[in-house]
Structure formats: C-alpha cells, structure tokens
Length: 127
Image (tube, rainbow, N blue to C red; front, side):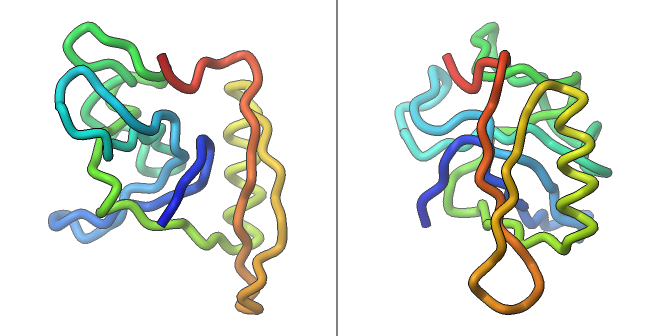
C-alpha cells in the first residue's frame, strides 16, 4: 500500500485494543534505522498523548507535534483510515488549529466513508 504525507491512517495495537489514529507526517529514511519503511504519524483525536515522541528521536526532528503526540512505526502495520463524515469534519476542525489544511474527497467504496487528500501549510512534514 502506498501512502503520502497527511494521509489519515490507523495503527492497530496489541494492547490496548484501540487503534492509534493520525495523519502521516514523515515517510522514508530515518537516522535511527537503516531500513527505509518507517512512517512517522502525528496522532489526532483521542490518540493524542498515547504516542512515544514529539516528532523527534535521538535529537533528530522529523516533524512537529505535541509531546507524546507522535509515533514511528513500520509501514506494514499502517492502514488507511476510512472515516465517517462526522470523523472527517472533526479531523478537519482539529487540524485547522495547527495550520494543516485537508481536502476531503468522497470514497469510491460506496460505504459512506471517505478518503482524505491533504496539503500542509507552514509546517515541515519531514527533514
């Protein structure tokens, strides 16, 4: 599965059984691993505070977010987040407060969900 910056995603955790929700803030190479399949995720909604970093690891900044508002995971555990209309509106309102503009496009799945294509303004998405 391919991702782009600001894609809405979820990461299923083993415990607790509630997935982490967020948007992609960094893709690719990182200084803490030779592997290039790492994804930096800026957490949103109730997931904020459940992260492990603020967008930096070992002094290297990859993106900006609140303390414990970010995580780095391998791409294999990341899934697209198919949001309901209400979730879309809440996410759009939340991200507007940190100067991230999202454009919501209808899903072709017919399930009433949607995918989000988004652009970022004034915030660096990666180093």
